[in-house]
Image (tube, rainbow, N blue to C red; front, side):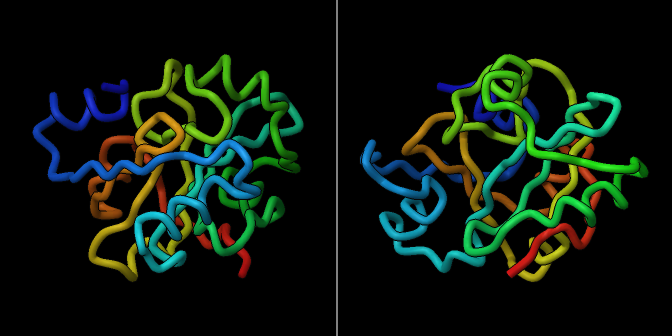
Length: 156
């Protein structure tokens, strides 16, 4: 499986794995997951990496239907500024390929921020660590296993 699924199984955390056939031509990995799995895009979250002005990598988990508010992320993290991380840096730090970066089971434990809208749903979907593989779990379980904190970091 993937490090994300292994982590959840080892912790005996409640979750369900969903898979679909990934289309390499899909313009958005997250929206593709929502469409192929027949899910409301508000319940499917993408994992993005940003870097602070000091180079600290931050994980942001936001709905695929919206975007990341970098100013709000910087404020939540207590840093002056945040910019999107270089994709190669993100891949090296997490051990996952772009489009399949999971907030769970990353190589390095990074500070994680989850958009507060995640708490509005009984379960949400995040990447399970591979394109075409999603894990469904509660926002509370995600926060527990990433040591994540909730903040208003998403923009519609």
